[in-house]
Amino acid sequence: MKPHDLKLQLNEQWGLIHERLARRLTLSKIRSVKRDMLALAQAGSPPRAIAEITAERVDRAEEYARPV
Image 1 (cartoon, one colour):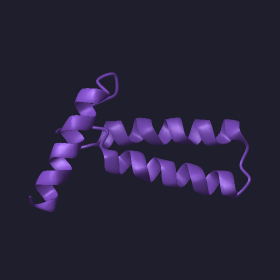
Image 2 (cartoon, one colour):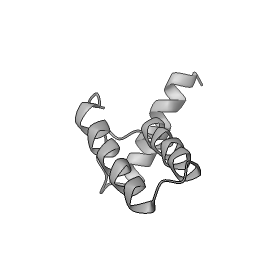
Image 3 (spheres, rainbow, N blue to C red):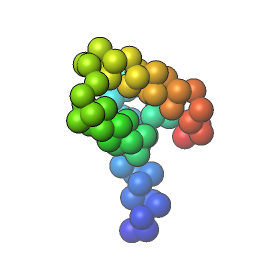
Image 4 (cartoon, rainbow, N blue to C red):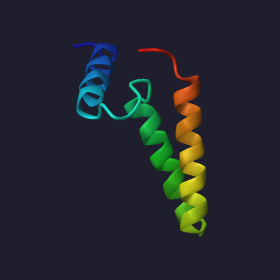
């Protein structure tokens, strides 16, 4: 299986499992947000700031994502 096909299949499976989240929010975007959250936490940011930045980032990702 080609990497691109595998990526599409994984995103489709994830979308079916997590129907309450936007389909345009892909696993890659979620990993990116998690990486940023970890960096903020390690830098000593307060939990509330991390939550607000993360929510804003997810909203932006959904807004500008390509349709699946």
